[in-house]
Image 1 (cartoon, rainbow over the protein chains, first blue to last red):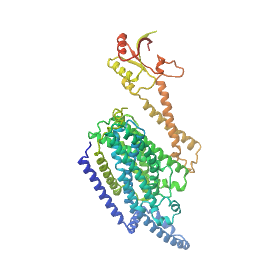
Image 2: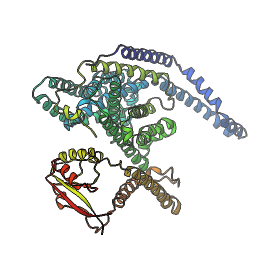
Image 3: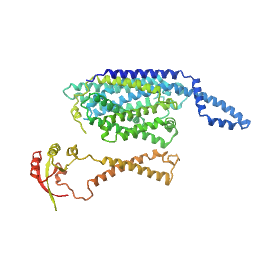
Image 4: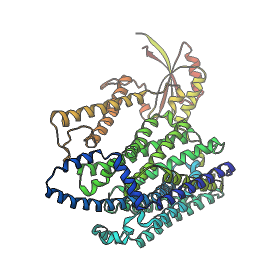
Length: 447
Length: 177
């Protein structure tokens, strides 16, 4: 049995408290930002790089009276435009703490959901190498129910700060959203969320129950039940995960859609989940637990990290290339925003999620070196955080993005909660699923 | 023609073969070659063969393929006959790069795979119509054959191999290399 050490418990609680304080203060300060503050800020920005405008103004002074008349009109319009722009920027500043919280909550929920899918794949394929890791996976998926409820709660609480289709005023003026409102409405959103979370949690509850019951059983009936529900779950998961990604992510840009989006999000959550399984396994091993896990298990997890990273890149690129090639305005605007305002996170994410794991984990021997896997794993997790960041932020905060206090605090907050719940779940059952019919094969597994 | 004496031991089970390989190596005899109907997992390690370097060559061939693809597409689509790709007449390789990624990927895989296979054939001294070196056709079906070198001690080797569960042990004369 693993006991949740006091140090780790305190560490996770400290993370949560720090995160809550940091996020709370950034929330307060963003909410106290008024339109006047924003105008001042914009004026200061303008002054710092307004050289070009001045020369234009000087040039226009030599124009005739008629032109001057027209210019006065223009100035009026420009002032009106400035007001609108300032209001827009103020909204984005208000949205930022909500978005930061939502991105971090979704990121950790996604890890648990990815692990659950990986776990179900192991059962459905009756694989022999992985049963020694089952308790780690089960502990990670313990976070799914609270994590997913938090994501939905934030989505509903933030409302039109994240999802403009939740604002009736916006919908009233927007024909495209009106056409989609049969699907994109608050009630539908809640009903679907209940179905998704209910389905995932039911599977998680029963598979954990059968897995524990199998430990003290003299036949394989529980294992067979797990096999059956895992196969059924995977069908449900593939549909619900895809729809979840439309609801919880894609609808922040309600005009834009991509048919590949669900798969792309799936690849992201799958690789994040596998990475966290590897990291927690290596951590537990370093603390002297999981003595039955050998290098070959780490090697296999690292192979998955390598392979699914490339799979992610493949899906990301498949989505990108078609949109880039076709260059249809309503589609390409998605990437145009990211190219223009999100250069660093957008291209940085590609380096972290593809080039780095590709080169680092290519060599077979490196996949068995624990600190190598840990290093690659941390980079992959940062990369996939940025991936979620790039999915949400452009729609909610636009060019006023930054990875600062709200973002980092939100990661600390949910990271602390994640560690707390996962290690709590680890301490609830023996770390070895000793009743699994493949446990011996798994223990002697070598590559 | 010079000949050397080698001992051929025939097995019908890969587990027995593996145990025999370990024993023969413990007794410090030299295993010339093992002929098996299918790849036996872990046999290379048991025989003490040096790790293969073919993965490194494969990586280099992949890099070559990537370079060939970039050079080729740059010449065809940008330099020689500039093309307006997808309504974006930038005529720059970098800005049109997404269109070339599938080709870059395919040629990387193509070169890595084909050149690796050719390297493998060259390194194993195999070519079309080469006479098979396989001493016993049963090893293409369900038998395993271990060839052990001798230094005038063929009788001792034969006795050792008989005790490892071989169904047949023969001393044969073989052309010296």
